[in-house]
Amino acid sequence: MWNSELYVVRGPSMSPTFAPGDQLLVSRVRQRTMKVSRGDVVVMRDPLEGERRYLKRVFGLPSERIEQIEGSLLVNGKRVREGYLGGLPSVVGLEEAAWDLGEHQYFVLGDNRAQSTDSREFGPIMPDDIVGIVRFRYWPLYRAGAVGRPAIEYSPPD
Image (cartoon, rainbow, N blue to C red; front, side):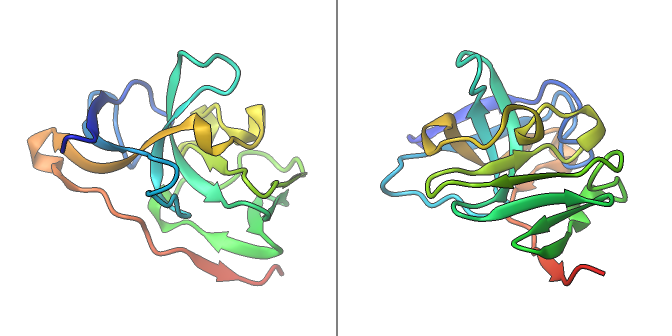
């Protein structure tokens, strides 16, 4: 608890997982002791304007290749099924793009891809950009509970 901060969700970029007004307990990241994994929801500094904070999901890990092809997202050539999106599309539009992450870079996305400023726009982020990992939602009470990492499923591209 002493290494935690409280955050309030502002904006729709993480819907349906989090809604504006949700209140979260975030474990601050100490780079040497806390590992960030795929699927973690993190609070991060805006890499372009350091004062602003974003709530995003870690999608790509260091040294991976992320591709946006034909409305799907791929990690190292494997299509990712994102059950946590609640039926929202993983990619908005059919534009194609690719990012090769460096050995210390992460690729983050909002769950509501149509209304999210994320790595598709500002590029991969560095570990120092990550403030903490969301561990618990304490408000609203009817949605209170631990925030875990979802199971990530892969399938080969068509």
